[in-house]
Amino acid sequence: MREFLLMVHPTTGALAIFATIWVFVEALNASAQNRARLLWGSIVAAVFMVITCVVGGYWYVTYYAADKAIILAGPWPMAHTVVMEFKEHLFFATLILSLLLPIVIWSNNIVSNRGVRMLVLVIAALVVLTSFAIEGAGAMISMAVRMGLIQ
Amino acid sequence: MDNSRLSRSSAGYTIAAIVAILFSTALTIAKESYTPLLAAMKSISHHWTVHGVIVLAVFLILGALLSRRSWNIGGMMLASTVFISTAISGFALLFFFLTL
Image 1 (cartoon, rainbow over the protein chains, first blue to last red):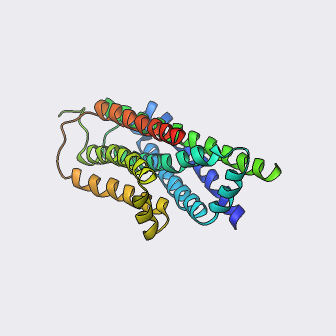
Image 2 (cartoon, rainbow over the protein chains, first blue to last red; image 1 turned 135 degrees about the vertical axis):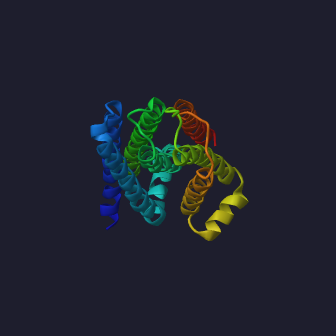
Image 3 (cartoon, rainbow over the protein chains, first blue to last red; image 1 turned 45 degrees about the vertical axis):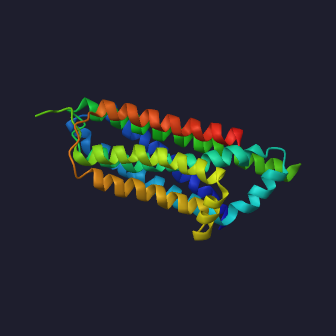
């Protein structure tokens, strides 16, 4: 169960990134024909991000202490003191921006309002960039655990 | 009809998101710098869980309150502000944990 939860949260995070890139591309080509796709893409992205939060958060709160001890005793202690701390707190910004995206798309006409379109593009880009940073941080933390175990 | 304005809910929730993101950063720095605050959060539950609930509550409650009034603010302005506040938040967190 522990390993399953550990694998699920980066996977749903990656799916949230894919859905947000989908929203970004649809927003670049916004028209009356793709309004529904834009809204559904943003809802899918938000749902995957919430699942990532719940599963990743449960794993972090329940199981991370053992990995933290290995990382701090290993050759890459900064993987916890900087990377993990940065990751776990930056995620709240990503989550909030993911939840904001469907609200903005649902309540405005993105086709005729250039300002709204720019707002959607910026929010989607920030979700993608911060999510990639978080995914990269996760990879570094996993490597730090491995380095701690094999030293 | 002024086509550049945002709906009440998107303006309200976008402003709430900006406030919540900056508040989350400030709360992170405060709890890591002031041990009694971290201890108080840990006394409720895991500090990350408490942090998340507080930040989400700020976003949802402030968003609902701010959505009640109309805002004379454009999407471009809010897009710039969201970008700047998220960048400030990210770099502040990174700088803080690098120097802690």
